[in-house]
Image (cartoon, rainbow, N blue to C red; front, top):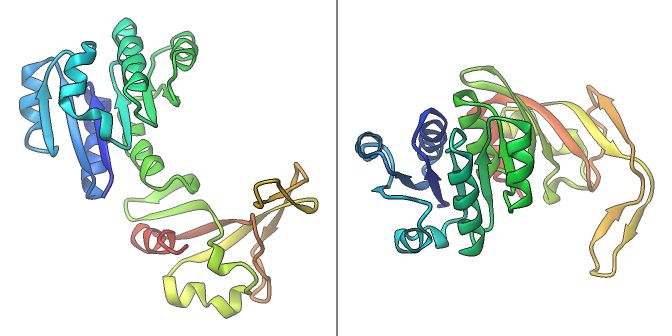
Length: 234
């Protein structure tokens, strides 16, 4: 179970917190507005009323041990900068910070933000999905329960055909395209493989006999439940 901190419990912060809780993650919610904290207390794992720009208070809150932190204080750029700096100093590996302008975003990136988000509530769920399932590159919601996603091919699928894997039968999803890196595969000094080409071929509606190879990216369609189940395959 992942652990996350959401700092700033406005529309954006609450949307992220809500999406993370739905994924059964642990969430620390922080805001200096007591009313927002009171509302969040019914949703998050732990709700704290505090000034997040105080690094000592942040230390005591336990955020130093979380997997990632989301700073949703986009309207207060000075506070966003201070909090982002403090989180990086405390060793939080991933810090996602909300900004309202491109200029603010550039400043936040300079001070250590892992990623800058500009949108409001509609982005909350997508941020949570990116945190929990970083292997998914794109996510297009078709309906409340159905989506198209682009994801890395699981290692256990490499070298096997779509027909042999019985992906549709076993997982309930359908591969509608394969994005395949061009060029040769080389071995790096650390022993890992990587493609040498920069382009990619797109195989639309791949045939059942198509063999999946390392570095393929699958574009699949299905219910969110089935997509999540496939995402657990390594």
